[in-house]
Length: 73
Image (cartoon, rainbow, N blue to C red; front, side):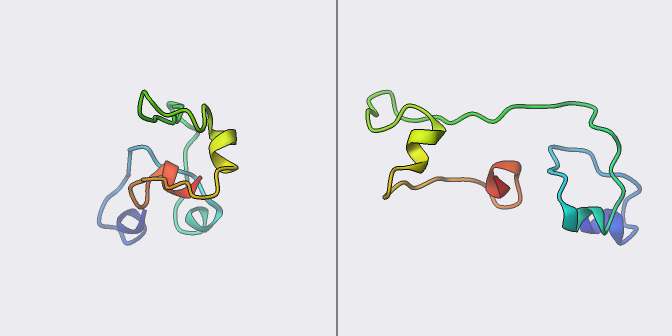
């Protein structure tokens, strides 16, 4: 986003999350692809079965790469 805003590149294409602060820096096209996010757990995990029950889990720990869509959601 910043590199396009700074004229280092003409376009950026990847799994980009459209956010209001980013809209202030660049113009977004209509999406050319939509994807889904999934939660994965160990096969023997019984404390939660979906994101809603995980959200209620007090000591839950999530791993997400900084700057990616799961990081923001």
